[in-house]
Length: 384
Image (cartoon, rainbow, N blue to C red):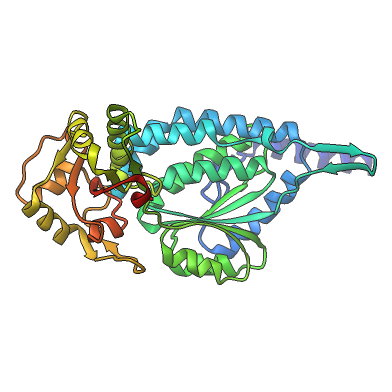
């Protein structure tokens, strides 16, 4: 019997020695957060959340620090990818925008415990995670939104399932991929950030209705935000904006002019918080326009304004009615838009300036392009 056992052990030993072991496969898309179905993505994110939830705050700090580091290292790559895939904005501005999201998004330091004590006793405030966050991201700001959401939500102890805009799905997948690698490298769980490989409106609706999604964070147009608000879940929504800038006689006009041109032309105005129209007190309007021209603004005449309005406004807005701009010109340069009305301007032109009346469609329609209406008003009270 002993001889038989020895013979078997020797045979097994030799067999193991001569075996060609199959190496473990490299991380696949699924390992890095990419899934073919929304249900699989949510379930993977739910498992990752449970793992993160049992980790220490110190681990979370390491994870977030490595996410920031990785995002900075690859910023030019995904900024260029976003510019090429969507056709929106300016590459240099996208890099700046992404850097801001990387460096300024609050991290674990923002959720420290707070204690209060008085005659009535002691109160301890601990901030708890929601769980699995459902995030819908736009085509206008795909990478900055993912960076901001990912850093902030993971720092707070959550996992995230993204449903990116289909027009930015490639760059979104790339960014989620490298951020997941950074998380794992820092000791975090796989699939803390998940995404569906082919995002659609239907997959977004499926995510909104999924029972394991604890809260929705939606950045996009009015339709998707409205749908999310009707989902029955808690929603943090950022929809369209059409912010005015008011300039009166007390302003530092040269500084105001530069700041307006810089802000309104930044990434070709695709950011919803960029200045969209100017309400200027009449006594300083001419000075403001002259100063804006020094910084890359070009003023259109009445006929050019009429032509521009016809091509960039697909559905005119007015008081109490939201309009729509032409997607053909969203995020395009001022020079590109000008060429559409046979006006050849240098690529250095940052902004098309249009003096119009207060009820003009350019004033009441969010354009998401560097076309800036200016309205003269008699005083600051009228402007406000």
